[in-house]
Length: 310
Image 1 (cartoon, rainbow, N blue to C red):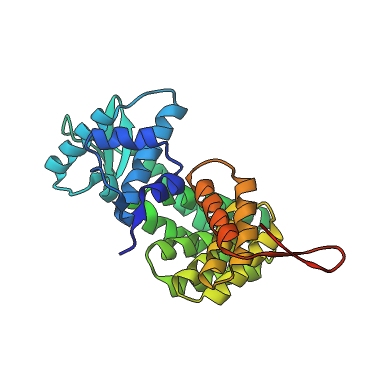
Image 2 (image 1 turned 60 degrees about the horizontal axis):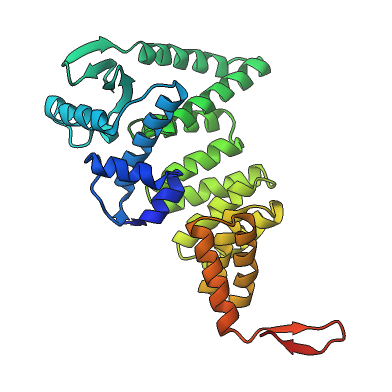
C-alpha cells in the first residue's frame, strides 16, 4: 500500500499545516506521519468543505463536522461517511447525500435532493446532445460533461461517476486530451498503472504540446519501474514548459536514481529558482548542496582548460 508523508499530504492537497492540525485535534483524523490513499480522500473532502464555506462566507467548525460524522456513523452504520457518501453543508453542520435524499444525521431528518434530480435530468440532455449532428451543441455538451466530471472527481464518493462521464466523453471524442489525462489519473490513484499508462500515452498523441500529459506519463512509468522511459517523459515536459517546477523536481529524482548526479543538479537548482520556499524547495536545495559537496565537478573554461569547482 502506498504511503504518503505529512509533507506529501500538505503539498498534494495544498493544505495549511495549521488546518491539518485543527482537524487532528478535532478527532477527524488521527495524528500520524504516514498517510494512506484513503486518508488523502478524507482530507480532500474536508478541504473542499472548508473551501466551500470560505467561498460562501460561512463557517463550519471542525468540531461541528466531527459531530455530524459521528452521528452519521451511528445513524447509517457507515465506517467513514466522508468517503462513503457526499457531504454538504446544512446550516451549521453537515448533511450527507444518499440515494437521492439528503440525510441530516443530527436531526435524523430526510430531505429530497433537488441537486441530484437536476443532475439526472442533465445527463439526459447530455446524451441527447451528443447524438446530435449540430457541432456547436455537441461541443457544448462535451464541455459540460467534462466540467461535471471534474467536480465529481473532487469527492471520493462520486469518482466512479466521474470515470463514467470521462468514458462517455472519450466514446464521443477519443482524442479529448483532458479527459484522457483525468481518467488516467483516476486509474493511477487506483494503482491500475497499465490502464493509466495507456490513457496518458493517448493524451500525448492527441496533444503533443500538452506538458501535463508527459509529466503524468512520467509518473506512471516511474511507478512501473520504467525509469529510462519516465526520464524521457519528464524531459519532454520541461522542454515544452521550461517553468514546470514539478517536472524539474521529478526529473532530478529520476537522474539521481540513475546515478546521473550532475544532470540532477541542474534540475534541483532550477526547481529552487522556480519554487524558492517551502519543504520541497528545501529538499531540492539540500540535494544540490550534497551533490556539490560530494562530486568533483569540473567546469570547462572558454579556453578549453578544465577547472575544478570548489
